[in-house]
Structures are given as C-alpha cells and as structure tokens.
Length: 267
Image (cartoon, rainbow, N blue to C red; front, side, top):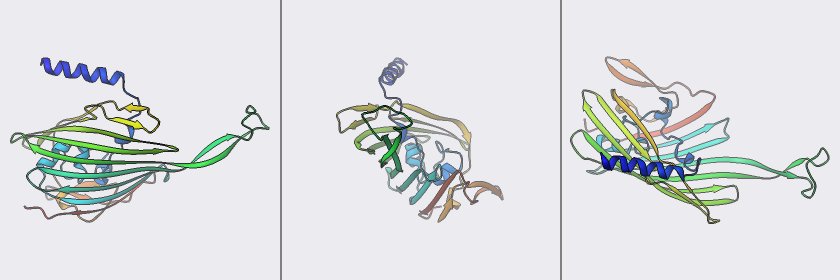
C-alpha cells in the first residue's frame, strides 16, 4: 500500500511539470473495428491493433495478422494512416506504425511587416506548410498467472510541424484480468514514465501519464468471423447466439477504409 501511495505521488508531481498537449499525437486511436465500435478495446483481443489499446491483450490471443487503414476527418483535413502487424510465439508481440498528417496549412503575414494591421495592410497568404507525425509502437505481452496478463508498448515518434521537427520516446503499460465466465477488466497506463519529445531547437515537452481502464464486463468474441475488407461503422449482430459483424458505409463526418488479413484460428 505504501509503494502504491508513493507511485501515485510521483505521477502527480510529474503531471505538474508536464506540457498540456504534448501527448495528443498518441491519443488518436487506431483500428478500424475499434473506431467503428466507439473507440473501445481495452478488454477485446479481436483487434489487430490491440497492442495500442492494451498490450496485455496480446497474451490472450493466438491469432496473427496484418491490417492497413486510412482514416480522414474534417473532410480530409486530418489524415490518419496505419499499419498493424500481430505476431505469434510464446511471448506475443505486435508492431503498429501510425502516420498523422495535415496538409496545406496556410501561413499569413501582413503585406507590409513594418506597418500595423489596417484596411490598407491586410494579412496575405505567405506560404503553405504541412504537419506530419509518425509513431512506431512495439508491443510485447506475457501471462503472469492463468487469469492475469501484463503487456508493454515502447514507442518512438518523429514530429515535423511546419518548420520544426523533433523526436519522442516513451512507453505504455497494460494489465488484463480475466475473471472467468466472460468477465474481464483492463487497465492501460499511457506514458507511464513520462514520454518526452525533444525538439531540434533544444526545447522539450513532457506528456502527462493517462490512466484508461475498463471495469469487469461480459463480452463474446466475434473477431474470428471477420475477414478481408472492412469499413468504419461495423455493428455486431446476433445469429444463433453468436456475434457476427456487419459492414455498413461510413458516415460523412469520417471516412475510414481498411484491408485486413488474419491467420487461421487454431480452433
């Protein structure tokens, strides 16, 4: 109990010195099925992007595969491209590469920089720039006990914002408890030892550690039924007591397309 109190106190002190929006690039969730189900996935091991949601989930799945996803938000202003690869073995592992881009950002300045803003001296477009963030996640997981699983996701980031660039490094820690009878609970501590972003001009930012958790809930796996092409807007339907996926078209607010391949289940 004393160790827990000390750890919470340390996280609180770290949070006081953190940069408010430094970790936002790590919060855009991957996985077309996860996005379709309202950005959920802390206790669901059927996603090929499970290493991001909760790395401990990898210890409970024997199915490998790969997934490509492209998502556009705000009529294409924000673009998200993702490649996920899940591997087998005694120590389960996964790789996820996420690219986030914003193109054609207009920078303005006054027609005459030496004069103040007025009707005769209006802002004009000076040039256009792009923002690009690339994040590499590598996840591993092991079963600590029969019903308790632990996972770790180290991550590296490259940021190119307008005319500035920098690098980031950190890790996420995940825990999964399968209580039995279809009930499970998951916890993911993102940036648990304070992810840092170091810019080329010598400044640095610190991401605030964030807890994400899910109380024990009952669930039934239907991911094994999913194959090949999928789109955002997947909704589970019941057939003969099993959960099966359907594939309606994506909404106009977000366009999301994906192609996935899953290895045959041993069952």
